[in-house]
Length: 194
Image 1 (tube, helix red, strand yellow):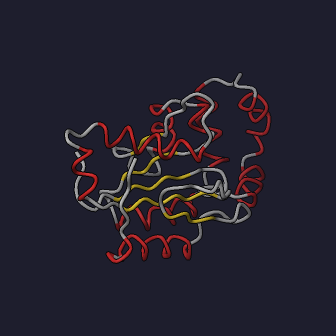
Image 2: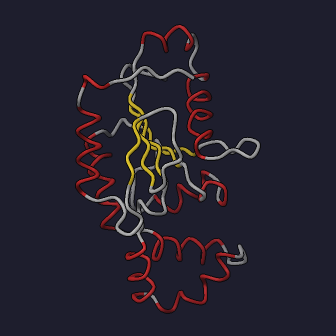
């Protein structure tokens, strides 16, 4: 169900909930997982090994905590994965990976249609999301929503407010506060049309 002033957060993972530094630090902390990396990259590792590797190496708790600053402030927000991780794993597997770290009840992934790129996946998801609601075409013109895109690469997104992270450090507390400020400010709601 769509409500007025819906908050939708599209998030990439690499360069946001991990960083170059956090990955290198994790590899040093868990040297026993070094041999798993090649199997994960070649998709030859078991799901248990893959999930363990991703949770220990590819997710940085400090950066997850910065994301939680946003999600705890806006628990009703939709968190939508717009990442190559969504090409590799199903929504169910992504939820399984993130369950120890994040609330996953409002987690979703962007659709992978045709040879879509991230710049197209966000509008595809918005279209599908609004299509689920009866009379959305009438409602969307009178409803305004906040769409935030958090990514370390600028794909020249055409909808939503883009917040770029630095892949070397990931999502910082300062980034999280800028996003919170944007989501809290009622003057910058935008009309979203699909």
